[in-house]
Image 1 (cartoon, rainbow over the protein chains, first blue to last red):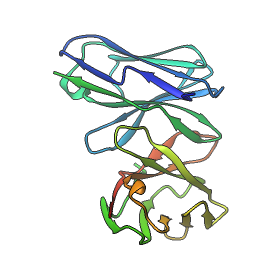
Image 2: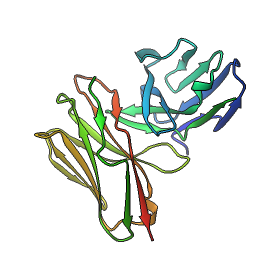
Image 3: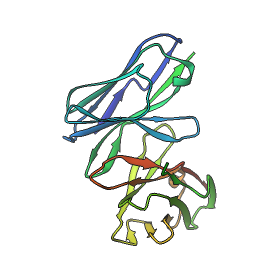
Image 4: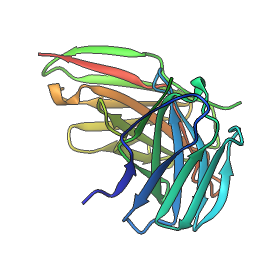
Length: 110
Length: 113
């Protein structure tokens, strides 16, 4: 049973396209996140939702739009993809400050 | 801004030896710290955590030490095994009801058989 699952695992697309990454957690946690990991492995928070409400929105281009239809899901939609968006994107949920991560989506923009 | 950093970006150890991974943090308000392990192609996994009212916590083969005076965190892995090869991150929570973890840059641990 995967606690935090995200799809797809790999995403290869052309510049200018729009793509979405889906995330679901079955842990019953109220808070979910999107993190971006660059080529140097640095992890940076992008968004956080608590019970479907946005609570953290770091300096992220507005081409990135998170959507939380319910507290178990937090999807990430990216418009007009750019080369610099290439990275690994991790979804996570948290309980008492401890993060539980998905296995990541490797996005490659060509 | 405040940040979490690591002294060593890479660390190679012989199998069976002990490993020590260090982390310096700068936010004195941080009250909760976590070490994560990230294997290739996977998401970070929780290893061990420690709250600021403690200076040491032990798990199975791992020990976390917290020195608030010098704002230093370390992860000790006893009898390092090939399966310990991964990137290790320290993360801090700045407290005040916040559940936003700030991650350090990561240290790659390579275990030599």
